[in-house]
Length: 400
Image (cartoon, rainbow, N blue to C red; front, side, top):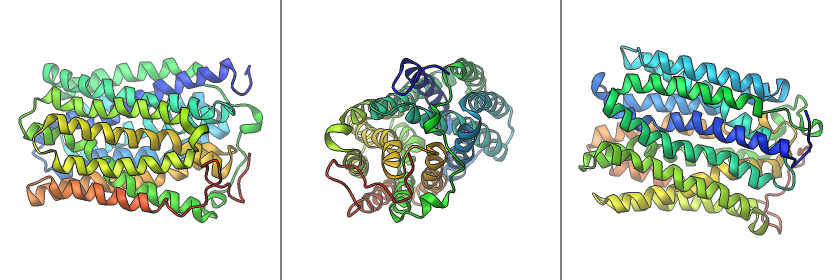
């Protein structure tokens, strides 16, 4: 390894994390484009079909604990190579499934493991490579998720129209795995002082502030992932074309890119936790826009754009808030622990919203559910210890 903190070598890891997070989560978040085709072929209800996305989200957040630990111990390259293999096998297997239940395993596990390898631990590596420019570097790295969503969701819809959903998965499998393998040499172990010791999970859970942060993330995620699955279907039910409807998820990803980079550059001026809390407010208010949007495509674009700002900021600022609270030693593992809250929300939220839609034959109560759960998560972030610079106060167990 050559180069130290904030060096040119450090910025190569940003490039690698940008593309690895973009491919893995961009693929996962494009599921809405496949939703209708798979539901129709397997004659499945909305709630049952949404379970695929729920399992995927749950898998990549919860498995982030293990992959974060693997990166801390073995370095990022073998972990990212594992992600490439998982994406390839998982999507190729999904293209062959003959039942929705089989898709739960092939897509949920395959894409889930790939995202667990390509997102959380790679972002943690980036965070450990920087000190002065950490917020900006992490913001650029996680902007890959937004770019991936912006590109892959409309691309999936167009390919499905032209070739069907099975061949589209085959194309995504080969192309996505190739990009991930190209990112492997860009990643490297962070400087020695930022590498993790075998830090106990109880170090984090010993902090009541950390426990509240996880609970807040759970509440946010219960509603956050509902639009990824259903906003396109909502638009198509109101006469919008399939490719145009898929653009909504792309706009969500695009606005999140601006938020990831923008919030990262504003951290020094306004403080990481103040901005983090603002993202939760943006998320909650966006669902009100969806509630009153009706058949207006323009209003739906406003909804996903506002939601994308909140979502993008949450993703960009989470590693910064965690490093402020707990330090950078073992950040990969601690970030994986933190994201278990979001993973549980992703597992439960979209299937429950699908069930509400099936039972009531309207999207209204699913939208209300998303807004209320986000509002609860927002309230949990108030009356927390924040220093004068707008950062969350460091826990007594913080290291690094």
